[in-house]
Amino acid sequence: MIKPLKIFVYSIACLLPLALEAEKAIRLADCLANRQVDYKAGQREARQATRLPRRTVNQEKINLIESVTVQKNVIKIEINEGFKKKYLLGDFFAQYDKDINLEPLDYTIQIMPFIMNVVSIVWISGRDYYIDAMDEELYASLEKVKEVFRRMYKKTSWQGRLIPRKLVKNTAPFSSTDRSENQYLALLFSGGLDSTASSLYHRHKKQLLITVWGHWDLPLHDEKLWNIRAEQLRDFGREYGHENAFIKSNYYSFLNRPVLDKISPEISSWRIFTVEGIGWAGLAAPLMLLKGYPELRHASTVTWDFKFPAAANPFVDDNIHFSGCWLKHDLFDMNRIEKCAFIADLCKKEQLSIPQIRVCEEKIVGNCCKCQKCVRTILELIVIGEKPADYGFDISEEAALRKSKEFMDKHTTGYTTVWHFMHMQELLAQRKARGEKIPQDLEWILSVDLNKKITKDIKFQDTINWHDFADLLPDIIIPTKKS
Ligand SMILES: [Zn+2]
Image (cartoon, rainbow, N blue to C red; front, side):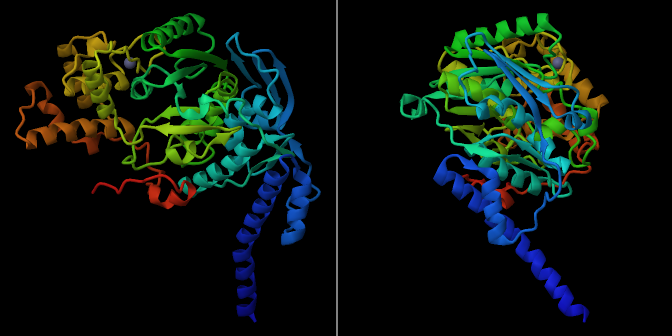
């Protein structure tokens, strides 16, 4: 008697995902056909077709957004009290430059800066939250990104849903002009090594360099620091012929990170593991539409060879589309030392001025030359034969070498830092194998046992195989892993 019951239960379990897919397909097909579709009607129809149980029966429909206020270049979002109390430290705001007027934009674009910074919280909340409307392309994108997260963080539940009552088809105002000819590029720009390399890599395109005031290293309360940093970023724009755009927002500080960082053992740093490019694309969206930049690039930090998951990767970024615009992860095939070499070679070859790079982890104007990020960047530059002082590191080569050796002798450090050191070690070992002379000052790098330097920051992380994600971005070419 038990066996038929088991088979029945198993059959139902197998059919459920198919039914859910059918619901999604019907909903999206409706939206594509009608442009603006009553979401509830779509769901009702889907339920009848698939005989799905009504998941939210007798359940209060919770609005994620209490109110939206748009005044010229500022948007303020009052957030559902319960949601805010559980996951956030306050309401949300974003303030754009004075030449920006958000008022004519569709509601679905005005709310993008907010929803794209909280959507992963909604997913992990296990609940349904409603919003009045969402951009149709963004809705389809976020469904894909959610699936990427499901596969990246398998031990974490992603049952919550952000449900729009209506999907809206927005069309970029510049789609029929030369703006869509791939000559205009918006770039998330911090002035660090990765975004500087990306800017120089795409130097022949007209760039909009977007920087957000409000990240952990540029706190909102420190206006003096921001003004100096903003001027340095403008200097870069002027030097290389690009336009700067700035956004002031509490997108980082409104997250209750002590709470969010503890929700899942797989996610030890909420923003790094579940937001990154999604959130920045949301903040950049109104700017891109108003200034006519259909493509946004997000410079990579690691490469295909990095073994562990984080939100900054092509499967998250390249799946983000909205209103005729898109996000793209940039230079995921170039590691940090290769980026240093690219910048150095390019500046020599094309006689460009050497960029001043700011990588420091301290909340200061320049580089402290002491933190792990300064130390490894200085060392990377020395390894490729460059002078760190030329790039904005106020330290002699002798002192830099002494400090970096001391750092590696005394400290254990996170996996990512060790991974970057491994590339320096590999490069020097390759040179030695080819019979090239290694400067005596750098010999010590070859003898460091880097595996002993790794802290336990990755102990709950599963390794990643990007081939398992290939169906979520069919056009991408995933390199075969090096053995
Ligand atoms: Zn530093």
